[in-house]
Amino acid sequence: MQCKNHSEIPAVDRCVGCAEPFCGDCLVEVSGQRYCGACKVLVLQGRQIIFEEGTVPCKEANEALTMAIVGLCCCGVVLGPMAILKAGKAREMIAADPRLTGSGKATAAIVIGIIALVLWAITVFSRARGRAQGSL
Image (cartoon, rainbow, N blue to C red; front, side):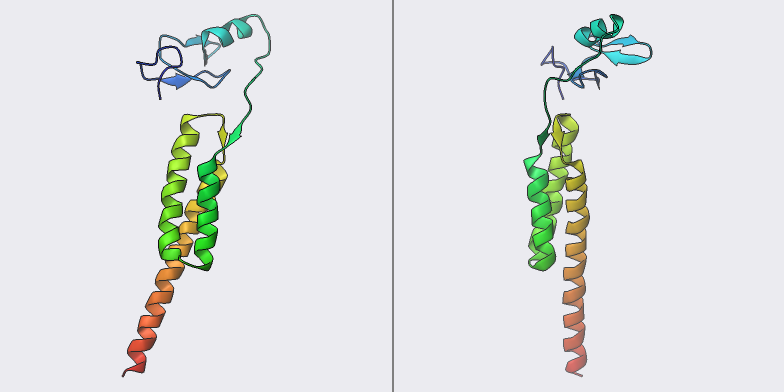
């Protein structure tokens, strides 16, 4: 994550007001909170900080959840890991961009993907055990 003002410098934190990433030189502490220059001015003037940008659903989180749910019904060995990987990527994207939503969907996709894998493993183990007992 890079500083919004200095693209060559890594961000150290996000502004409490606008949630944008900034380097240490761009953030100022006011009343124990770290603000960017624009938000600092609003806070010192006693004005309310208004977010102009809306939130955007994370497409990857939606896709991961869909894969995980389908993986419960069929192809859990394939779709379970795919859902887990895509959900991990979605969580990273959501952490990097405060406008993205869907962290709950990404977490649900990870849990359901793991359940799909476990159910697949239990099914395979049960079938193998049944065949082994039938051949005795």
